[in-house]
Image (cartoon, rainbow, N blue to C red):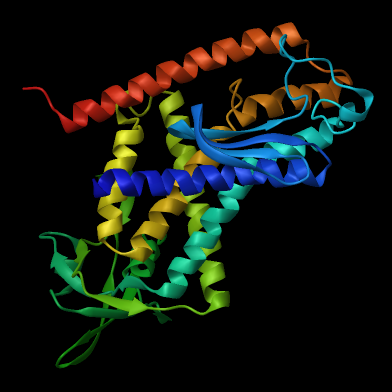
Length: 359
């Protein structure tokens, strides 16, 4: 039950943030918003509020949300807009205003991710210390005399305070010898180690070549709380790393470098939400940031019915000076919806296979 609850919390917050972006920019440029919905399908609860009597609602299917604007689509059962209503309709806005409204959803998701990461670093994170926990046989570190329990305090006279910095320094060495300053109970030790190129498996399951010396972390951590400025810098840097990882992963899925059975759906998100919630507020904030950036990037894909599909049509309109025909957009949206349904079905199949393996 906790897993379902936390999944609803995570998805609810991120959907709200996304739709809030569309809503605020729409109101800012003068578009009348008819419905602000968390979820799809039948209306479960809500209220009408404001001069325009916008319907703020919670709907039955909690796997998304939407903002319905006046004049956003040409539906046959809708009466034609009056001249006064036309002023406040989505369709009557300039193309760049419509682009801003559509882009605001993914942009708010990305800004929320940065805010969540900044807050996580301010609350405090466990930083892995550069203490050696394992030494691989036959590797350069063993040959140089490194031992379990050694603490690396500098490489080439540059201070090392975190395992992440130690690892990156080795990987970026281009094979050049590195001068390690090591602390042991009996005193400091200076050793020179030349990294060796090894084949390893990366997070995408690919075999890559990288520089290694043959040591692993000891698992010792230090709880660190960062000030606002440092937390902001680290939050932006971490958001960029997440973005790079997600974009790379999406590209590798498209070119089939990663098998399609790696795609996860709502059940995987629910499971991960439950696990991260048990680990505390910081872990939950990191998880929400990751999912929020995922939503931002996936929504920007040029697939009809997604924000990216609308942006694609609006950019064509901006370039050619006239909108894409309603017929073309209608057929494209049908194709896009069909593709999304297939993708969701495939993701659900993968989730069920992981949860209930056969044989």
